[in-house]
Length: 319
Ligand code: 13P
Ligand code: SF4
Image (cartoon, rainbow, N blue to C red; front, side, top):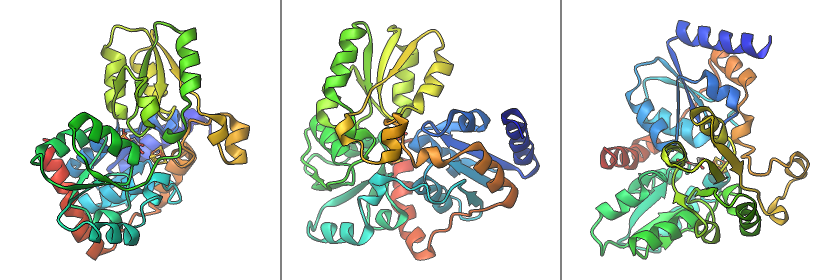
């Protein structure tokens, strides 16, 4: 099948099966093109919570599928590739996080949405990069808080809110490796370009930003701001939607520090600001998963019963 035929076949099947296709901004552009809904982590969770489709195809990484499955226990949630994990979620195993929580009695536990369901089960409130500030600030100033797993996001929220949250030492390998020197070199080449930075990046990169935000926040800024050139320090999949929404503007992906690029595949591809887990989601896999209605995301019922509370608290606080 050609790409166009594949896209048409997926859309036809989605209609026939009353399936909704949701995609994160980091997946392949072709997959974004066939989605009913594209969004950041918060928007995907909000959308899943209110859909009336029978099937949700979550084109993203596994924790996103889990969040949808927890919110919609009566629906079939499919992910095109169940091996699409997340280095940040993996950096926070639930049993170790539970021990960390136990070492800090009396703390409110805030977890970034990029966690497994089991880690969410030992959490009081889930946040995303869109609402982390708002949710932290909704708590009284003297509330002791544990924040995990992203240390860069935690440091950023501490800096802008004046809190001193206790941080888990986790990171996203894609965001942690942007190079300050290379961004500065790009700024010299494009003096009018504004720098857009996701808060999962290191503090030294955040300092260079004209705008810090979630993927949806950066996209909004890029569309609305008067600048016409942007250096983008987040996973490069977002450039697809930026270019689509603002075709007259120029978007330059910020390069990583090559010394921090680890695998031979990444070294060969030079597409080092890509998340290899997000890029596992291809059109072919979306087609197969919708046709075969698998892999289905399942979450242990005891874990789901605990994990839904901090997710619902987040949705409530984000209204
Ligand atoms: P947001 O889309 O919520 O900004 O999340 C970024 C991310 O790393 C998702 O894996
Ligand atoms: Fe996880 Fe980073 Fe990939 Fe997002 S970009 S899914 S945080 S590894």
